[in-house]
Image 1 (cartoon, rainbow, N blue to C red):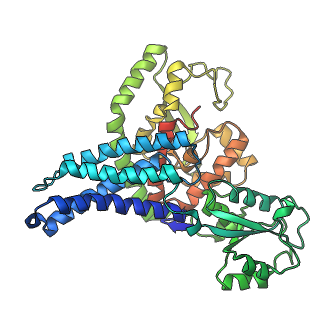
Image 2 (image 1 turned 45 degrees about the vertical axis):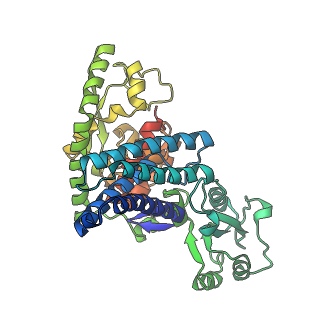
Length: 464
């Protein structure tokens, strides 16, 4: 894993994205050079060409990101992958044509050929994804991981390493002398006759994940772990492993000390200012683009049933400060006539016919963009919850209050990583992603979330 702008990326993902960026750009620049007169190829003209090539390449990366083609955590079947590739190809065609129409280049006579060549390049890149599932062979970047421990935590790490989307290979488990529970498969437990150092050297281990359920004195061979680290083997704590590989801070692996003494949780003036400027600019653009959709939505809500178009509800925001969330009404006006707050569930009978559509497409959330402008919310952040549930969840789930150290968002890392939650257990799962965001939030991660939100909306993932 590589940490870039406070966010962890799989090495193969970065390699694929870089390759896509270079090849799409190279295709356009090659067309420009071949089809332009030599006298026209000035430094200014080449610079203009590079700008357009980068816009096309970034458009390609944004489209693929939104469709989940760079997400190693998603495993698509052949039909799903082919459908996403075809959508990517069509949208890329619009991007290429749009760039050349909006930014035409004087004395460049190969506009049509530029479209053809760039689309051929993107088509080849997408075809490779269909045929192989990834651009680079796994063997070039996969690492061998040894899990130190055999208990419940070690089992959880092993399960992530054996997923189809994993970028590492599980080489086995090494039992601690003080660990009482052995929950992993016997075939995966390495022989205790050899020392940890010997096994690491023999099997060519790249990383050791410490996943002990019991950490009392003598549970870890500190000298051997140090020798492994000095020889170039990475030694990782279980909480750090989950953070880097799953994009979450696991409640069953983290401690208050890890949160306090670790890096992250930066809430400085510069970050706050940049985020606020980004929120204002982004919300303004999105409101202008979504205004026709909001007007049509308001009309059909009023047409379907009597009652207000908008639904206002008090939620808990930054530093536990209450504020009103405004959404398009998607439920009957008597949805909580008994006065008891409850989460929406799959197939909820309280949802209207129009409500089912606008909830699936996330259109009901659009009025919250105005809350972003007035400063109550951010474009990206943990979703705000009602005070009734906050009080309950704070008592039942450790570290739940941490999510209120940043502004709530219209969308969030938990929303693009996990399904809609309607139970305490679901909320605990989503909190693990919210903690990751609070710890690592940056403008770059906000952009990642926004791109993935587009994919969530297109596929209707997690809607209730």
